[in-house]
Length: 334
Image (cartoon, rainbow, N blue to C red):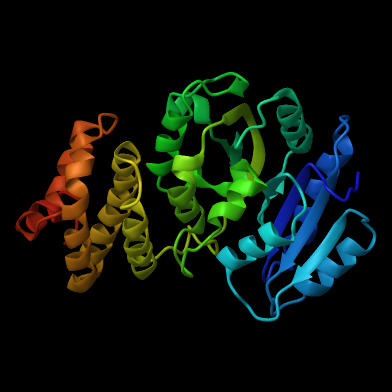
């Protein structure tokens, strides 16, 4: 249902997605068609100057959909800025993201609308689970509730700060914005400011974390995350990891102490991968930088009560060159 002030804006950033965009939008339309609840909505395709036929595909898809419109950049600005364009151009009270190479389940839209309708307190965030879909068609479900010690049933989380801490201490999938519906006002307040190559989802959560007071959890795998070697997470090489670390550490300084501990655990996860990659490639420069930042992270890592003792020991060893031989032996690096 199209409206001047829709409840939900669905935003799809688009860049060189000619192979996947039509399937993505079709899954969104299919999910909307399945819903039985009264809800106003819109679909925005943010076209970031693709060099393939994505722009033409987006225009064709929007042509027959009164609730869909295409917003085009004049220059390629990257994913973080495409998300910001979606925030500014949307009219909904809430924004839900779908990446152009992913899909959504048939009950995705109705589950989201039902959660918003049931919660009179108007949540800051609605969170749900996802399924990983591999190129061979294999599916691997993810479970927030079971893995993250959260409320396992539909409803408001009793301790949203605990949920936020879990988001911050996750390296990848738990911090995805595509598995969350955000109040637009929250997005407008913080926006996405990550440099190209950094994890823009995690960067946003580092900014918005203290402002999230109300979280509604849906224990369903509503989002289908299609694994690809070409995705940002899949191509997060050593230089990109260090770029994210530099960016994130500056943002972490502004967090409350409990959130700072959680975020530093995430940084430590990234740094341990940089240290290992440095040893594998025999490139000392990123290794030296990773050790410098790991020494900053270690005090917070040691204070994290949820982190296993063995992981703390490995992080500690990776912070000092004296233990390089031991790390090589543990990781079987010659």
